[in-house]
Length: 506
Image (cartoon, rainbow, N blue to C red; front, top):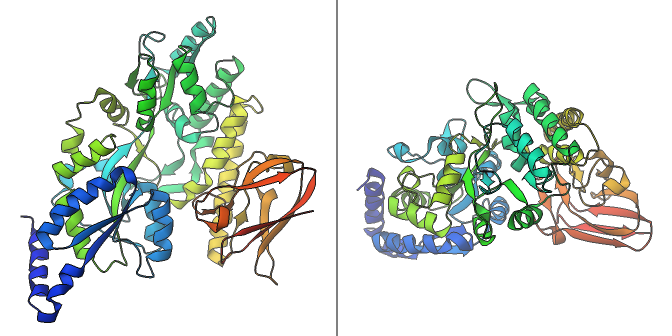
């Protein structure tokens, strides 16, 4: 029995010896927020925990974005879950708000994928127990592309050959920085620079680096030659692949069932590199982890549950079986017998953890818009990436200044933005569609002349998507809709207390 389990047992015995408090332990419930995919696993492991300590484990089904947002409200009020499931890139926000309790993995380090532990480590403290990783890989149809291309120049040559048959070598989701990232890194590009200790330098934006610009030039060449399809999304990718007209694309294990359903042959593997630069492109990796609410009254119980009941081969295997993706627990990861999951694991062997810093919120829209401009041949690649880097830098500086002064930056990103002068839609950092504080009412307001049409929008804070509000002020909620039968003057009014947006149309 591990030391912490023995200590908790002593703690339980002390409670049970206190006469009237003898029933306290039996009345204690450990609450976990988990989505429906993983809920049954926690309930099953929870039964063993209850048998050991007489502490019931309750699971409420809540997705990761919802549990993050709920914890920020319910945690300080003492009403949040004891344990939540989170993606690693959201951990810093919760830590900054004092919502997560550190976890000591001493004695368990050898069982975890080191990069997974690094992803949930902030300022030297581990804040969560990682249990799964996810990353994209290259999907290749061996009938169209018999051999794995070693470089992206080879991919371009394959594209030229297949174009003669009206087929495509590779399609990448338009405007999607996450899926394009292995191409960027293959050329030596990156998002933020890092110092020797691994700390991010948010003033060093790698889209404008030599490698970032080279990757943008390659994309421009592919677009100009007709080797890419504008407005590509997952549906477009799978349609071309199922029809036998696509040699390669990029996706993650979340679409594995859909890939199998195409009925086409496939190989899941890593990414090409660039001669003289890299041997292979590196995708982002995400880490799913189990974290403890710092406001919980049951922190010792939560620690024992995670470290002695979940950090085991059996529990980690059960989590893998419920949602197959490469495990962060090495005994399970190394024993994968599914060649498809093994392919994703191999593609992610050198993956880069997505930067777990708030400034990533300012990256997605600007970088994604640059990719769209390149693929649609509206702007040359290097210029688009330089502009994106400058937009990201400005957004970060504005957000930092606002945070220092206690002010809010309130934007209204949506499908209406390009129509009123933004470079692209769904850009939370576009200054054209920012709202201003009305000192008299305390509301944030903005009035715009909007052409007739049907639109969607949300409220986003701090030039990014980390904090956004949809219908009825719900954090991360569904988009608002706006239907204009004629050109109209539209006023958006956002209440910072209720988070609700009101729209007035003239």
